[in-house]
Length: 330
Image 1 (tube, helix red, strand yellow):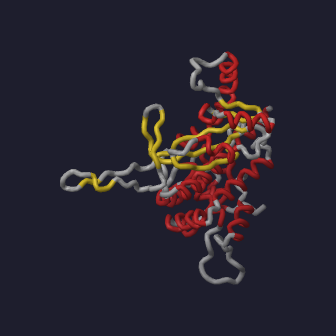
Image 2 (spheres, one colour):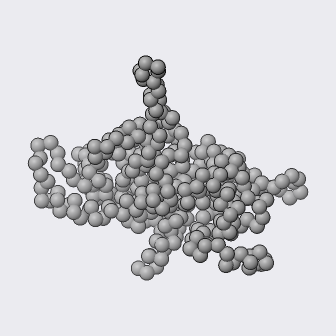
Image 3 (cartoon, one colour):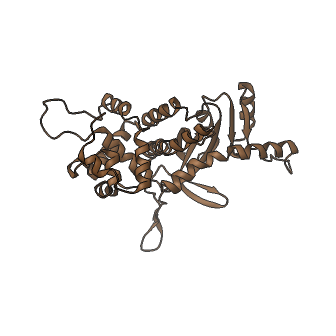
C-alpha cells in the first residue's frame, strides 16, 4: 500500500459525506486491473512505458471512472469535466491531484466512442458481474424478466408552403413506435434478467415495437431453476419448454380467447409469483429515477444497447454494498 501523502490527509474530510462514502465503496468493487487488461488487448489503451517521452496518457482508471460517474449521476460530457474540476469527492474517486490530470470532455467522448465502436461495454458488464459472482452478490438460481421503454425524440413533421407534409423523419431511424395502456411511445426497449436480489444478470435492447417475448430465450439461456415474468411472456411454447427443461414457470397467467375469467388455480399462481417478481422493477427504478436516465442519449440501436450495458454495470456496482450488507445479516 502507498504511504499516505499530505494531499491524502488534506482531502480526507472534504466533499459531501454521503457521496464520498459511496464513491469510496465503489473503488473496492470496480475491477480496474481486469478492465485495463481488456483495454490493452483491444488496442483502446496503451500505458506509458519507462523512458517514453511526451505527455503520459490518462490512467485507464480515470477514464473508466469518469464513465461510471456519468452513469451514476446522469451527466453529459461537459458536465462530467466541470464536476470533476468542482467536486473533491469526484477527484478523490479518480485519484486526481491536479487540474492537469483531469480529462477534458473531448477525451471522455472519444474514449467512450472507442469502446462503443468495438462493442466492449458488454465485456465490461461481464467483468463487473464476474466480480459480483465471486463475492456471491449475483445468484445463478432464478430469473426475473421484464422490459421498460426508453424514449427517444419523435419524428418532426416538415411542411411545404401549402401545408403538405414533405418529411416525417426521426432523428434516430432505428427507434420505433409502440402503444401501452392506450398511450403511444417512441424509442427503444431495455430488457433485463435480474436475480432475486434485483441484480442484473443480463441486459439487451430492442426497438420499441419488438415483442418482449422475442428476447426471452436469450435472457434465460443459462437458467435451470425458475423464471418469473409478466403476462406478455405467456405462451404455450414457453410453457412446454419450461416443462421439458424442468424449469418452474412463474410467468403471470392471462385470459385467453373464450375465457371469461381466470381459473382459481391461475389466480393463486398469479398472486404468488406477482410478489416474487416485483424485485425486477428495482433496476428500472434505480436507472430511471436515481441515475436520471429516461431518454436515449445516442442514435442507433447498437450504441444505445452498448450504453445500456454500461448503465447495467453501473447499477450493479451501486447496489453491491447494500446487497452485501443484506447477505451478511442473513
